[in-house]
Amino acid sequence: MSSDHKMFLTPQEAAHAIARNGRRVLDQNIGRTLVLSLLAGFYIAFGAQLSTVVTQDAAQFVGVGISKFLGGSLFSIGLMLVVVCGAELFTGNSLLAGAALHGEISWRNLAKNWTIVLVGNFVGALFFAWLLFETRLWEQGRVAETAIRIASAKCQLTFSAAFVRGVLCNWLVCLAVFMATAARDVPGKLLACYVPIMTFVSSGFEHSIANMYYIPTGLFISSATSSPDPALNWSNFFVTNLVPVTLGNIAGGVIFVAGAYWYAYGRIETRP
Image (cartoon, rainbow, N blue to C red; front, side, top):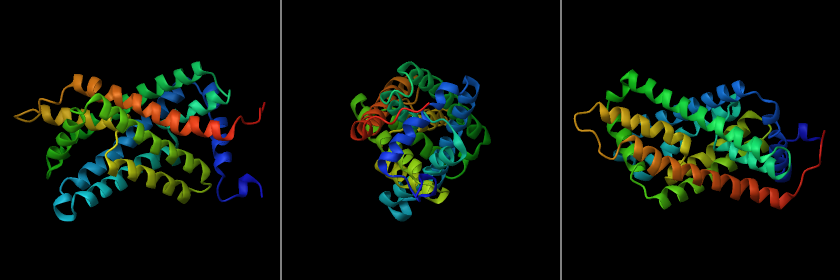
């Protein structure tokens, strides 16, 4: 049976498909990459916003564990949108390291893509955070309190804790993309996105692009209150959280998924 008619790809086929797909960066112009990166920032922010709203008071009714499970389940809509609708997400693009290891693209191509996508994701998530702030929906219920608490906690992590949480997060995110590539239909891709993303959010791991929404949202809301949270400032956002989490995300995706499967399955056949 041809791969086009199989219900799913084998792990080896999926790893090679991801590596070959990396060649898109050779032909995709900067404008398209940037637009798709902005969309990914929006999509992840949609999931983060939904998770914040639903879990604002859930713990008092269903307990902390189930509340985290609900938050993780709802957050997964972000990657579902990225995968099914098509977008360029920095954390998922850690898998492009596999294409570089296989010789499909150069490391320079990889660095260029990562730079453009990271900037696009940041602008998209930040703009979405501003849009949500302008809706004033955070004034309802305990949304403001929850948003500030989430952002403040992220800005008080140690470098090592943020880094390791970033590693564990993107290990799962890249496995979600890996499984979504293996799935050959939309329901399969949605399930592939759901389980690992629910796992990383429920576990409390750190996702750099999600934090580009969570922390600015907390900053915007905190600054509008009578007693701003002292932990919430742009320096803590970038230095305390974003730098170590981003480095951890890169390590998790490159080493434990792209690198591991490149080593396990070797080089793909050279194609014109």
